[in-house]
Amino acid sequence: MKKSLILFTLSLLLFTSCKGNSTSSSSTKTSTSSNSSSVNGSEDTVLLLNQFKEKLLSFDGNVSKRTYHTEQTNDYSGLDMEIEETGYYTLYQDNFLINQFSQTINEGINVSGRKERGIADANRLYQITYYGNQDGDNSVSYYVNNQTNLEAMFNLGFVSEYISQILDTTIYYYEMQEQENLRLSLTTNYREIQFPTNGTVTLQYRFIHYANSSTTKLEEVQRDDILMIENGVIVSSNTTMLYALQDAINYQYMTSEVTYIYDTLQAFEGTKLNPADFSVRDS
Image 1 (spheres, rainbow, N blue to C red):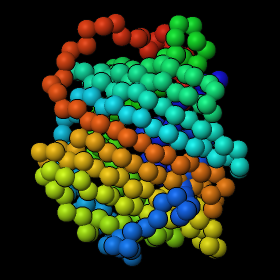
Image 2: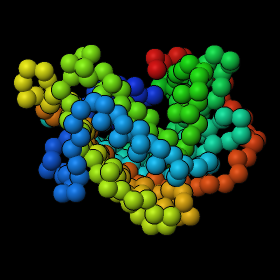
Image 3: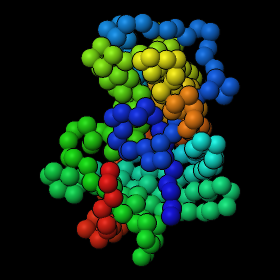
């Protein structure tokens, strides 16, 4: 069975669900910078994250193409899976997107395929995963056609993805902290960051969700993003991330290099795959 590379983030509010759980980190691979600051109190944290979101949004742009190379280790109770993926996304007019990719799994299994995203009807968006004619792993997933999912599925920029996967998800945790009696810890360098018009900047993020009655780390995330900015837009990112569950019994470690291209969107002139031709996979 083919297994496409799963990039990960906190477990709640994912656009793409995390198959084969995993994640968080140990400090041996990613460490907290000395100029990072801890945040205490849910109201202060939500305010900080929303303020940083506004800063980031000023560097958002209309990305038409994204190229990437990602290496990821999935560890399930000591059993490792190594996945390397190279590919690109191309966004076309009228909310249609193609992701062409190739993977190597455990240095032995080579997989290539494509994903197509589009609008099925007024109520649904779709994503087709296609490995070739008559392949048993071909499938389609459907999503609610709303503004949140449109933004998540058809915005290729760094900013939109970082906000939805990291900032908004963390905000959700802290908004639920009192109601659900959550024990949370967040350390970032967001207060210290000064974004240049041209140059590089590093985002640092450390998040822990503890068990209520012990020091067990139910979830832990350590993530660093080095951004290259040119003329006020982000043109590349270099990301290192660990995401672990249950004191890192299961975890994922990922490094990714991405470039962002800002061109005028073109009309798609090829033949689209038909979502009705594929079996439905739960999203």
